[in-house]
Amino acid sequence: MANMLVFITGASSGIGEATAMAFARQGTRLLLCARRADRLAKLEPELRSAGAADVKSFALDVRDRAAVNAALAQLPEDWKTIDILVNNAGLSRGMSKVQDEDNPENWEEMIDTNVKGLLYVTRSVLPGMVSRGRGHILNLGSTAGHMTYANGTVYCATKSAEIAVSEGLKLDLMGTPVRVTSIDPGIVETEFSEVRFRGDAARAAKVYEDLTPLKAADVADAIVWAATRPAHVNIHQILMTSIDQANSLVVNRRSS
Ligand code: NDP
Ligand code: 8X3
Image (tube, rainbow, N blue to C red):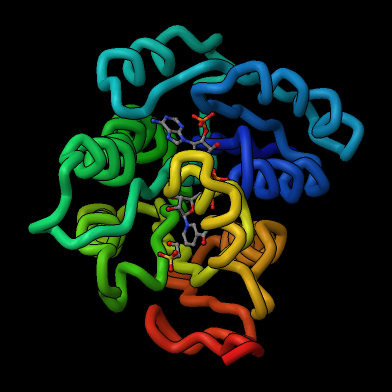
């Protein structure tokens, strides 16, 4: 892994940050982006101390196609040869019925980030992987893409789309050595719910109350595992939950 260059989107928090740390321990070079560049800058020395061969980070909003293309085009040549892309940047906004949604901007933000942003970043990285004859794309899906839950229609739709995109990429890439993996976790305790509920910490805490959630590091561990299989092995999908979850709907809460 020491010669590998790993690009992680949404590395300023949660699963993306934990994945950066997990790859750092493998000694890879790390290219990181998110909108909060200050957080990435703080993370850089920690990743170096953990073993990363080198780290470069930059501010990027994956919803901005021109900015995605420009950011990748402006990289120094030796930072363009990305071996592993982790399309992690993503979010949920709100929980409501479609007929009650009074803020459809929430829908745009989820679709633009989770689906279109993932495609923009992939399009800017994938041709290089194909022409170099090596590469691995790992996309963050969710149990939400496997089973829709009430009041989560649009978020679930974006994660369902992520599964379709991952399957489609695998088909597109047949005949090349580039691998595609969809990483599909259930409930993971990160800033995800605080973002979803726009800073309502009490409501966010309820999501993780009375159950054992996955940790971001558990998901990072699965990502590194998928990325470190022999080159001829393609892990298509990892559907993972904590011991207290069966699917999108069935969760074991100790209080109930
Ligand atoms: P966090 O909120 O902790 O992290 C989300 C990351 O995405 C942040 O680094 C954020 O950075 C980045 N991000 C969001 N929007 C953009 C954008 N427009 N451009 C660039 N970066 C962006 O949540 P998680 O770590 O939990 O989520 C990571 C991924 O995992 C998401 O795709 C999520 O859907 C998925 N997931 C999460 C689960 C959970 O229960 N937590 C379960 C299953 C999947 P910044 O704000 O600085 O831009
Ligand atoms: C995140 C997991 O169940 O909150 O994708 O949608 S869930």
